[in-house]
Length: 513
Image 1 (cartoon, helix red, strand yellow):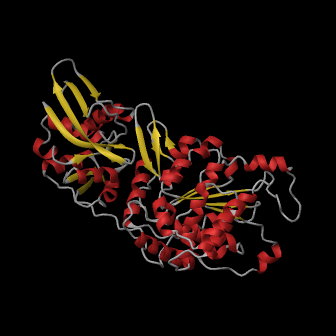
Image 2 (cartoon, one colour):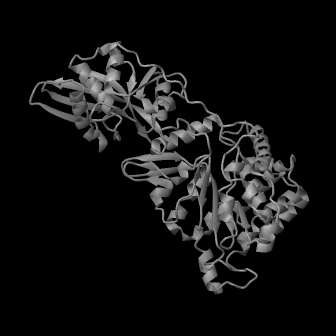
Image 3 (cartoon, one colour):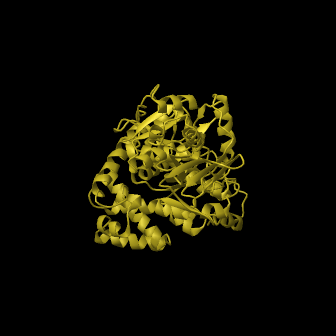
């Protein structure tokens, strides 16, 4: 007796359909799973056998073979428990074939027959939509997450018994309602969290954060301990534009595949803020492991990746940031598979100017000799520095000024200008595939939208020579100038916009000298 149940597996942040073929044949009693099952898939046969017994179903001793097709692709995870169990029930006559072989099924079984949540339910629902599969049955915890995808009837079940009753037509599972995307979408809406009102002084750093948020640029803050670099970085999500619907779906998919989506959260509505420790491994930062999982750069997709004490990260870990910062995605390659994860993020990094942290401070507290300062700065390679658009010095604020300084603008006020600048960019680049912000401009886009007047050209040449900028750094200066012009509501880049953009590279030129 053969049963064929539709299921799905995760690869990267996408999914692919898997045909679960269950055959009950003659021969010595056995239970084997073929089709390159890995880890939890192989162990699933014991969970399935125990779950069936605990819901009162006795499978006669037969030679049971389960094939996961396509058989030449590795299958990971525990989501095949439910379709295997349903296939056995169809093969033994406990469920009608015509009803069981229609919907797609995914879910992990407990030994008592309960259904437990899985990774990547949103990606599975999206694959069902593409393949025109009308119905998907998932664990109840995953139902609202998967129901966000339109065009698929998603039904959530709490146990194997509920699925059996539904497939028999005795008690139909209700169609899940999609989770509301309650993130604000206007200028007034934004991230709940630390506010820029808490920051005293640091006008240059605050301005740099606004420019970075408005154009999607990467930011490096250099300053002594206690100057407020971390405090500023944690306020970056609050001035970024709210997540659009498609962005929210992408972020939710990544977090779901990584298994970090909280049970009570169906859709991520806040921009991610990831701050890994400097002891993180390469796989932890960009993805990897067995099975391959997204790294911090992908978990920060459409959000902020904050790297504090940047020179303390291992050099080889930092160097792998080049691809995601340049291309907006990361490709993780192994001998048997290659996975591509999205990584369109805003990098905010912070570092001290020297090992003791007090280089160039007026009090003369620095204990580092010039050679040691240069070695410390050289831990950040030139190619990586080139990919960071803004380099800002964050000085310590004297105590007497700190106590008397009035608070500046709130995050909400800054966010209004950022949102308006992003809308200008969205309208300008509507016809350019994959370009939503100034930081993503291609060379042709730079030629078209970052044109300078004659005095601007002269200023750019002079600044590039004095600051010893590479060709890549020059293009990033032009992108910065375009963002500053957008914040100023100007159609063309003026010399003062370019001068401010060059100023934001001056801290790089002075670092380590």
